[in-house]
Length: 374
Image (tube, rainbow, N blue to C red; front, side):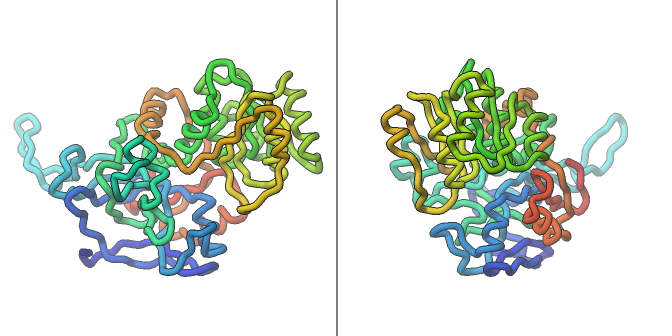
């Protein structure tokens, strides 16, 4: 069911074909809420679907709304929703001796884009991100939330405290990747950590690793400006990679840290970087693969095996939104420096071009025409 209305959306039709279109405003189901979207970040996967029309086995076959790093305001709730409140217009309220009409805003929420469709074995064990039938925003065939109005499962919309901005709420999605990766890697008090790649995901891993108690974090990238941003968010050492071999990169990591890192978080998916990650990691340590590249890569697996280097993957995240909100509300983590560009929704195509060129760190789209504040 969908009601007519102005609902501007960013839609990919096929590789290279990105459009701004008006869609009907959706009607929330019994356990859903309708949101007026506020801030939506552009992810590398959004750009990849636009440029290539697919990521692995996920192929754009029908027009798909992009966007999955998002926050917004509740404007309508389904009949079964009790924990979230919509905005109210024209409520009669008393203020002193004056009776006046006023407007109360709805709950501000951050959206977790992955919603299980069934209670399968993965959901029962708390690893719902691995459910093969999961709904996920902007992963074919599921629509994302880069639009003015969007409906979502109420259980996966999390109320934002007053001291957490909409943009911080949208950044919980990439921050969650860092939380999940650092947990999978076992980062704890005194850990030494090597982060490969200084894009948005590499940077959130620096933030989270430091917050979880890492004593020293070294990060690599080919971009000097991105490494400078890494220093700003807490990296202890940076290495600008040029023509070094993977073994030479590993040697530089050890030299700067004064030891081989116990945990390596690989955020690029590039074959040479995965190789460097194996060579760099201390015997008995852990390599976490976050970045996704080609399906088949050549890696020094025997080197990892004989040194008991554990190689772990991550797929998105699970059970991270409450943790991330608590960290943001308590000011233990500051993600605000990650946002370098802002565009109104009407200029989404320009925003995507900016992201494609690799400018800045995180490009944020502002979907509410009446409020472009962070």
